[in-house]
Image (cartoon, rainbow, N blue to C red; front, top):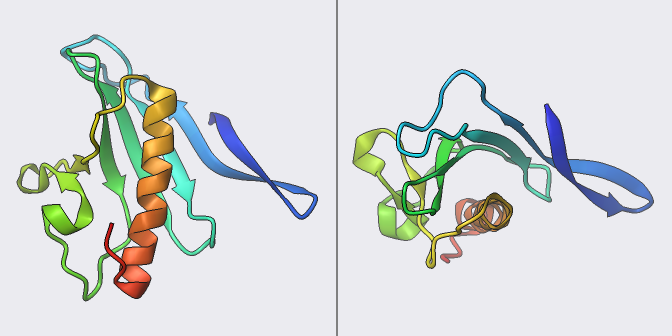
Length: 125
């Protein structure tokens, strides 16, 4: 894996986000390689994994590969800010959609932190 985001906390650098380009599959619409990232929430409790894929209109869609269970919280599209639940390939709902990978990564990180709060304390977003 290459790249990543580092957080300096109490004199230590901690890698929070690791990404890599997946070389085995290209997006049929844009002929671009998906960018796969793994994120650990700031609390260190949960891990999330996404595929960042550029769409034909320039939007970067954030597909959720792996995330923690919602447990007893409602897991519907509205409560969890996810589209595509019935397709087996859910992705993050965010308006306006990011149009570059850097913004998409920030959206995904913020969504993960808010999802953690929702799972632990039922705080909606």
